[in-house]
Amino acid sequence: MKQLTGSRAAVMDNKPTRILPAMTPALLLLTASLCLYSCTGSTNQKQPQTALPNQAYEELKKEIAQHRKVFSDQYVNAVDKNKVLAEIKNYWISVLGNDLYEQWKGTPWDFNGTTKMPRQGNIACGYFVTGLLQDMGYVLDRVKLSTCASLTMMKSLAPEQPVWNLSYLTYAEFNKKIKEAGKGIYIAGLDFHTGFIVNDGTETWFLHSNYIGRQGVIKEKITSSAALQASKTRFVIALTEDEAFLVRWMKS
Image (tube, rainbow, N blue to C red; front, side, top):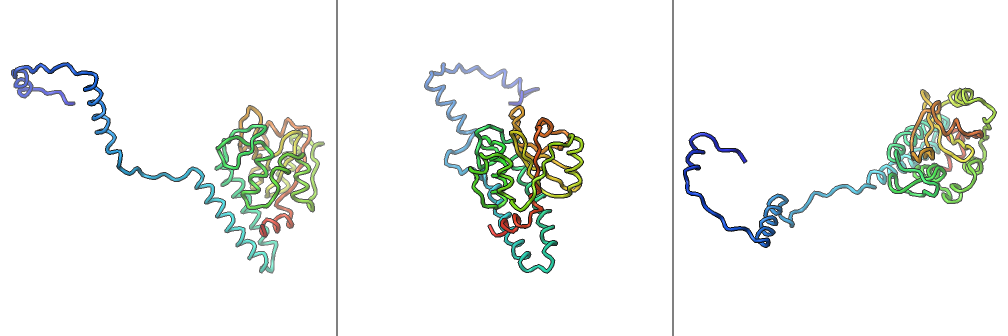
């Protein structure tokens, strides 16, 4: 409330003072209720509806399904199928390595985490890998593959693709090998951990639900990944180099 000044204030000061009766507790409660009502408006007033928290993610999965159908039609009718496969590889790098990750970023890790929705509940490393593959539209037995050894999971997903045992390399040599392998989505199987390696042609990333410090879903350069460095075992499979895997994905 503005303070009155000048002649107007003087006039107010000359008026006789009214003594108001003391307010009873009931009257105080009524007055407070009226003030609250005047601040918030009518309780019957419609409030603007907000989007469901899962809506954006569900829309993303629908878009992925649409693209998968388009790629399937292109692949069937293509004279140069390798060209279509190259486009699919780039699509996987972009969507799994960026779009899906941005949704899952920061979802907490837990050994027993099995959530299917990003940032709701917890997610273990194996369930994170299989969950993203499912959200890309690939049909799999999530529980079975998430709870088996990572090497078994990798062989099951791409049985025609060789598994690289890079455990004998120094970490610097391992980094160099992954960079030289070229663009694509890879799966890394470690001592007690698993995740995606994303080579986007410029940088190589480790995308995983990080158990260290219970950090959860992160995307970090493999040159600075403590989880990769700590593992004595490093198996890698080039998922997007497996044509049979990509064909099964298109037909899912």
